[in-house]
Length: 294
Image (cartoon, rainbow, N blue to C red; front, side, top):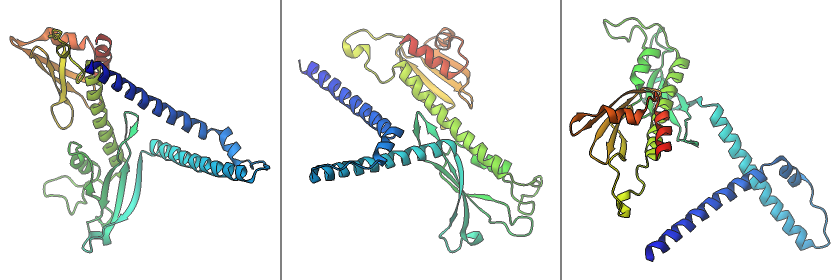
């Protein structure tokens, strides 16, 4: 009895949250409509009641302020969606900073699962001296995940001047900041895409939901119990089944499936691997198959 009551309360709370979300969406849609903006811009007709007119003016001012906030938010989202890679200037407060503390910053915007993430930053300075190296940039600080190969990208697109290069290395050909910025953003987007694939796989496989055993029923041995990243780059995933089998899924940079190995009690289980993939070439295809089978 108590369990049924708790379930009803949870359902009601979920409905309330859903209704509140729909209300916010409809409110934002109505208040930003051109017709609404036109009505707010019109003068309120005079009324015989002064108190009623004052109340209408107050409500109109509140609606106009809310409309301005929604419009500013929409403009910011549009800017972040279009200008995903921007530059800015800053100054290092350290009195001993090179180049008088001048900093060139790269701001990288990432949109994942319909939400803007916190921007990533790469700060560059000019520590080199001399006629050849005075214009060369170097990575000073950054907020990128540790799995992003920033050092390799910097060595490729922002090589040091010939005078600062190590002995035995090839001479620097020059720097290409635009290609460096695009390459860094591409790696960041790929990383978050792979994270999204893992989340979609877990959701499609029902990982984390109530199991059959919790309801007193026999648990299916072919049910997936866990899907987790096995490395920092999220290119390898560990897959676990209810009967104790484990697998390792290897993905490429863009989420393509490179290899899947499943191990059971008798060694490698090729049938389970074929049953999970079903000829799919990408992780998105596996997500669709799992969602259709659950």
